[in-house]
Image (cartoon, rainbow, N blue to C red; front, side, top):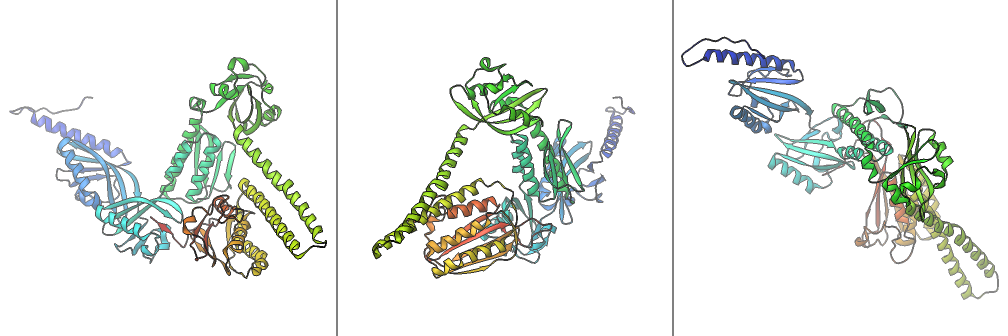
Length: 624
């Protein structure tokens, strides 16, 4: 590039020429920088005073650089400025304080002549979620955290020692970073110690985003996007290929999911979102797009799955090495053969393929030397059907075996027990001694217990296989009905049942009554108690139900054992009651906690999720 210049001869060289040339370069640089409207530009003298500023929100000319930088970043800003003076350039992240929030900039310093230019691109703004004094009294709470207004954090957190240690670290080091649980949701927490304690809380959804990239099918990608959207707690509609979730409405925001340049899905949000949520959703759509493109990386898939192709006539045109390994056939033995010679239900398979894809199709295959049960997923690609085959023989045989034994229990043994009870009833009508009648009664009780065990196994199997949709259920009505069912039986044992549950909707299904039925049966049969109390309260997004009896309790050492399948103390019972309770609570997205001890009775705390409503909870449960 040719630059104009003025050359004036002076003793010692072209000094004036050089000065004018440098001045011209400076003006040229400034004009370029002014054009970069997304950047804030500073021109500083050698003492760090801002002579000019462009594209910056506030008047800062005449200020020193350190005056506009947040207090804790002043040392860092000074070091970058000195590095630029000495080496000609420096770069780093600097926070600028603006009222009660921060602007985080990526700064680059460049020395030109006697001046330093600061080129700063704003990365994000951040504002404390809430602020307290050094004794935990809340001074400021953002819109999401209004539940903390007028409170002291030490009254809200669950583990005060952990909280105190975090505060001490922040005070000593200037900042603390760690993890936190807010109403049972995991998040990241950063505590900054300035003139106050500033708490920055960011939901930890990056783990969920990473799971999308690790997905191995479009269905998995779809399910994992749903998890992120549910985590963000916004009303949404999601479409990915032929899969849909959520309701349709007028969208405030729309984010496309691409396969290269082709739109294959969309995420629509029906409510206003903040800037961080918008950025997260943009990133989510990009991650989903990358994950979909990654599915086409056939080399990665070949290493883990058996793959074959068939033409429109059903003839095999390609198999990979994994297919040879799974079926036992070499490629030359099977290529150009009709697929129907090796696999069942091909007409059904091809009919399902008419929609363009097949998902999780289960069929028997005639492998070389053995029969295989395979799960197949297929797509139509360029006139050929590409199929991923997974050998699920072992899993299916185990399922079939379990179903067989359950069937035997439910039908044959149960029926035989009923027949035995019938004969015992006839025997009772004969001329028996008092002792013989007592023995018959014992036999009837044992058979009755066996039938109850069979019924428990049947119910446990139904719950284990439960795949129906969860729905909103009035928990008060369900618990009241269960309590009335057991009222008479409890009185026989001298037990009173006190029940006080609000008419609250929770997320559950038709098995909800099993939770309370099993707890009450457990107390009646094993606790040796005189009273059972069931009561509840709302807490954040959960409805907490407390179940207590004043019985003999059990040793603390069994705390982790009582929910295990089949575990029982003293050889009585089926060992399935509390297992079913925990299984259902996990299914409902909640949890169960227990307090036990010899002579202390049993206390269970059941956390049921309530349907999400717009607006924030009026209670916060914080655990650092």
